[in-house]
Image (tube, rainbow, N blue to C red; front, side, top):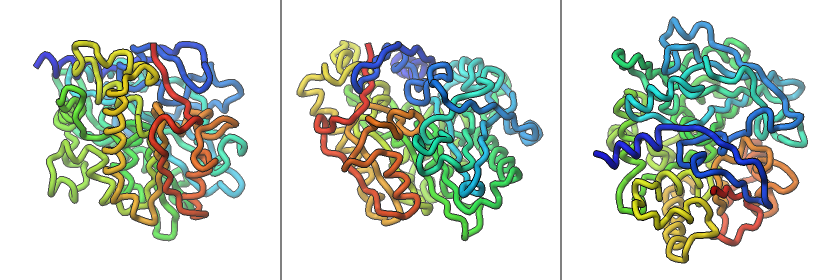
Length: 419
């Protein structure tokens, strides 16, 4: 019980402490920023650190309260929308924000006092970079689309529906999703000729969970696809042989009433916790889906594979912070994780409509950061940056099934390094 409680506290909490400085392609961050669940380290930097970026204001969904579609603390959910123009005026990209989960009352109560659980604490405007950028030279495939970032304030990947009155907690992720889609449809999305549902990390998981629902919002004549960035959380053993992430996800699913919002084709055959893992969902997703993930996902290394709770002796401490300090035995273990990733997507990759970009980097979330999405020194495979690969797949220019050679062969990576 003590071990599980610690896992809940570590995984369910989240802050960010950026450490200034960029050395080569390695971002240097402190351990707290990584070990505490999902921070800006995995998404776009804060507005003040993105020079000349487009700033987009927050819109609260005024009709959401009447539907019970509220954040953990009962405040209204919100989104940021930059209108499309020209050839992109009737094209829509919805980016689901990431930011971890909460799996028990304690961590959810903490969360509701942050921007991940309350619109009261959300930034009034944020920078649109990477896949959200409005500049063709930064975002060639989607720069002139309607681009929306849906803020994340429920803690269950937009999938829960329940409450805890004693703790004054509202678990209404599914209702937020529905209210946001209704709002955007009324703002013009109903006439879209092209649409893409995307998301990073917990939002990447959400983009898989809601992919077919999203497809169902549009006529058959509308081109609809989905993109999951760093959302392939694997149900695998940690370094102690335990199941850190499975135990944690079990708490999220049980506490937040997620079960009834999971795909029935999965829950008819597997337990609800298993159906919160993407590896058990992607094979039955009917809508074209692109999986963008690193083979050595930094968050999963830190918080699922080798968290402090599974490593009491500290053997993994240095490796967890910096891949260059891993021993040969540790690298071998991480190669095993890569193999698990490749096995999980094997059947999925056989479908012509799906796309893949699995690069051998120690990173997490690559769509919203400009340096990893599309820039002079972006990560590449076959000389193709992520933005170009996603664009080729979305516009049916060519099939994209890119799987990198094992670490350390890829010299274009922007690794995350912690201290």
